[in-house]
Length: 87
Length: 140
Image (cartoon, chains in turn yellow, orange):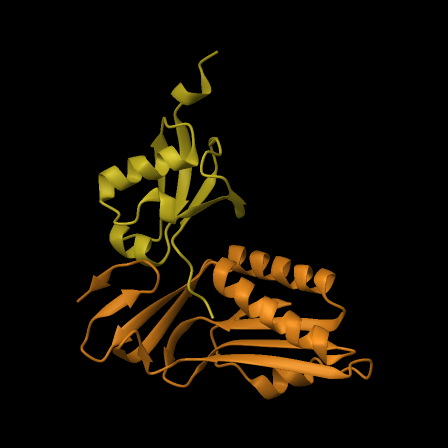
């Protein structure tokens, strides 16, 4: 059995606010070999030049807030949450 | 309940929905679009939300308030889309038997909503620039 970290996963990513503008998309489907949601952000940041470092973000998987080191599995919908400013 | 609204908020109707003879106190909070921020003249605001996650987190905050304070009811509505100066961005209403719980819960709700609910604010300035608040990036 292949190690989880080496498996290619299909992930959907949703972008909001500053990340949506910097990516130029609201959502995308992608394939990745990374293991955690934080590693996925680093990979995407390297590719798209997001200005916010991961330390400023929260992550959600399938509409649940998750820790930055939460593992990813195929089919997950991931949202990176820039600093919020409601109210 | 916690809701997002694309339409202007109607505080009279929102408050009427809380009417309950068990309540002896009603505290409401309205957040309005201000014409300046950190020395810059603001022309308009844009609010964007992660709809499903915002409503879920908002419901959680309301539930927390109900557990912490002795309330009759609590509700919160946040506007999304483009707002003009003076528009209401958020409305919170809390009813309780007594005023202490109503004031405290209202304060708790606005503070937690601002800190936790996935809603983002972009300010458009008089000079033509704009910025996502708390995201430390100004763009022309």
